[in-house]
Length: 215
Length: 320
Image 1 (cartoon, rainbow over the protein chains, first blue to last red):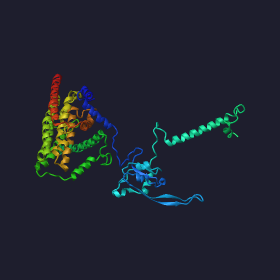
Image 2: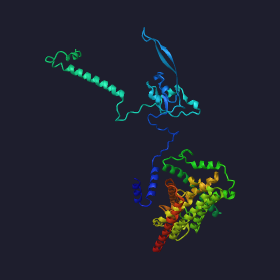
Image 3: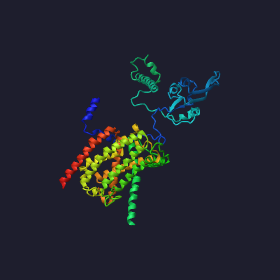
Image 4: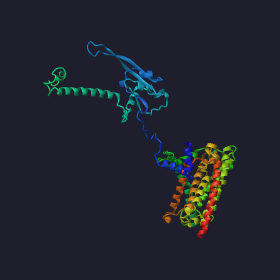
């Protein structure tokens, strides 16, 4: 490889390397620059950017999984139980968790995203919002109202790649729908079949479930 | 009275050019170098694409403390920036801008005057290096001296070649004698003159005397504030002078379409194009080592310059 390079270098006319260098800088000058003019223009962040964690508190059941899984314990949750009266007469009263406080200390958070992964009720989301610097480290502990506000900045999940596998829930739904359609088709076929060939065929067993529909 | 007024007007014009063009080239350097490196360069000062960046720099330099080291040779140390800057102003007076005596002051031995005075400019760096009482400054000064010795000769030889071709040493006279085919005829000399001039200005890739990674800033290490700014201004004034001289000697100065009305524009355009090349070279090439620098001067430029003189002589005899 190095020898090839050397041979190539030797084969050029004298000064060709110098000319090549000049060509590179001139070409770079005509192209777009890479400078990000950040405060003037906001950066175009890729989808799933890890800016800040938003809380969709309507989904939160205070299961505490996020707080327990957090590697640096930066999620603070307080809650109390409330009793919900029985829904039906004679039924049992149920108790329900009510969220009192949900705070994330972003001075401690290391943006690992484990809380978002473990949340079984889709209450935590990544938001690309990143401009929340503070002058005091204590101000970096953000309470539930702020976290709820950040929910509005959570973008729609990006579309799947054209060749990607179907999402599991859609695949399952499709499977069920296909099964149902197949069953209905079979039913319809069975209903249609006995019509013309009613007399000679078997009047008994196979026609029996199909006969319920036309009648 | 009329003569006095005319002289005053001419000197004023030269002075304005001397103050404006270096700043224009400095700003161009900011922007061109930035874009050659995929950056934007200054964007804030003055509002539109940082056009006032150098004005802001000047204000900053003027506000800074003017420090003279305790062990420095005070007088020489304080005088050095002026010695570095003023020769370029004097050279500018002698460079013809357009036809019909459009020159600050027509000097009969113009080319001698110009080359001699340009050599004085380098003296400023030597004074600064010697007077600063600093090892790095001294090293920078010595490198400057070595570079001056090596590159003054090819510059002189190629200028002599043009003088031979024109049969005169007066700069306006040379331009009056200029024919378009002088450009290919003197092209080697032109390249040698330009490269040697770059080395004399200590511009990259010949900036070993101020190599910041080796000797901090060479002869200018101890300078602060306005005196430092004057050294920087001298560098850019030097670019103006070198580009202007190369344009006049080798590219035909004001010659071009509609030269009678637009001669000054042709001079300006050629000068600016050459200044762009100076910037381009800076953005492209790494610094030459001290020994490579000497080798280039003595084994490449001087033989080429001598060959150019021989060629000029042969062609001149063949024509006449």
